[in-house]
Length: 281
Image 1 (tube, rainbow, N blue to C red):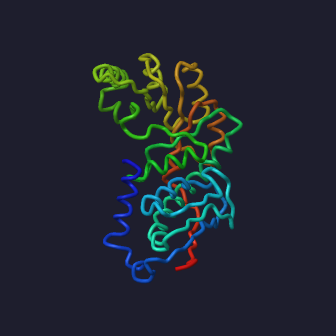
Image 2: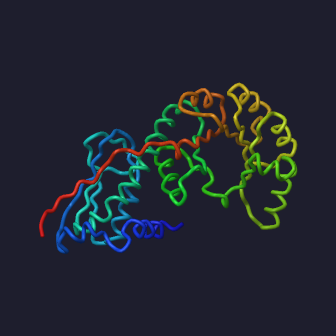
């Protein structure tokens, strides 16, 4: 979905036929300002999106940024101020905050995990376990936090998971059909195959011509064994059952990627607020 379209639909959902609290209580010509207050330590994310929210609703709103996306923040920091029509500030504040709180929570968690494994060469990936229609913001927050985005959707990469393989009749059949499909459609997409055990891993290696092998629910020692068998013929991703408690152990196996769905679906939003006041009428 186009970002501007998302913002427009979000406003339609929230405002309906009017922000009647603001329309009733605030004079048409009232001018105000508001500051984005940080109430919790973390990583800031969503500043650029918030600017788009304010400006799409009211291009006359002025945003002065003091802290950019990706910086460390602490209680009491002021990330930016917004100045202009008080009605516009009040109507847009919750949408901007909802986006920023969620994004900052994800960026904070991502940065924490990235820092835990920075002594290795592993790259942390997100997944498609995202909030419908909010995926762009969640994946952007992962990137801001220092992680990397896996495929965005079903359209930008081939990923043959267990159900694809079972329905296709096996790994060899799934890979063969995939290459035939890509040739027929004249598409160039990377191919990743999920394996659940060493038998399936051997089938992938015998069939060949894939870009990434995902080791699903392999334990660290098994991953080391698998890496020896794969021997650098393609990239290797570890996934399944990996969390903050065991992340370092998995990263130190030497695997190329670790994907963690919890980066986007088990994260607490960061506490920030927008405090407004009237300057003049």
